[in-house]
Amino acid sequence: MALLEIKDLHATVEDDDGNPKPILKGISLTINPGEIHAVMGPNGAGKSTLSNVISGRPGYTVTGGTVTYDGQDLLEMEADERARAGIFLAFQYPVEIPGVATGTFLKTAINARRKANGEPEIEAVDFLKMMKANAKKLGVADSMLKRPVNVGFSGGEKKRAEVLQMAMLEPRLCVLDETDSGLDIDALRVVADGVNALRTPERGMLVITHYQRLLDYIVPDVVHVLADGRIVKSGDKSLALELEAKGYAEFTGAAA
Ligand code: ADP
Ligand code: MG
Ligand code: MG
Image 1 (cartoon, rainbow, N blue to C red):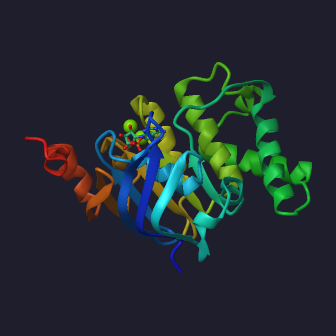
Image 2 (image 1 turned 90 degrees about the vertical axis):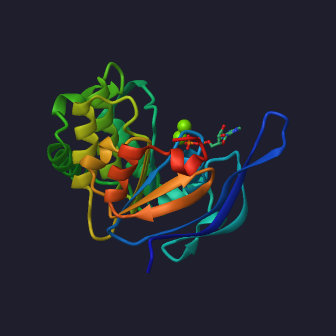
């Protein structure tokens, strides 16, 4: 069964005058377990809108099409239900939480998920074991786990913390919306190594990026070009290189 199946998805946002503005204009894509799909496209194409509609962020209206996640009608699910069902959206801008240690925050996040699913809290020993194993795998220093969430973290440390959070929540579907924007090459590698470490035969990933650079490290199975709310081309990883060389002009109607 497909992990995520999007068929002819149409969505609008409200513009400043309160009128619905069509953004997604018929998106179809299918992510099977184990696959990494990249979505690339010019600014304003609708990439963030797509990730927000998948995660159930308010402010968007689906006006057509279907989204099926693991056999369920995703569009019928509230945002928190989607998160509990294993959808993780990586934030472009990490939030600082002064006074809350990173490790404590992770434990709270795991227990919130467990509680909502009617499961008991994780045993302290099991949590520590899991956190240490993941931290080691992802190159997160023990000292970082004791520091308040993102406070004074470097760009690379914030990304490590985020990938650690993703690992700890054990998502089925990871959506990374331009997680690479503004990162230097070292931080980019942190994200890529972390994502690659989380690659399993069950898990699917949707990696949204404006630049090809990230895809040198996270090698996608399928690359889609999103322009003006539609997928205008899909291909294998070589499509990303082609886009890097030629730009998006041929898809936007702009002169090359
Ligand atoms: P991308 O992530 O590809 O750069 P977005 O999905 O952020 O594109 O935006 C697509 C279009 O939708 C843009 O024209 C943007 O201005 C518009 N848009 C997105 N969100 C909103 C919103 N909340 N209110 C008004 N317009 C929006
Ligand atoms: Mg944008
Ligand atoms: Mg965006």
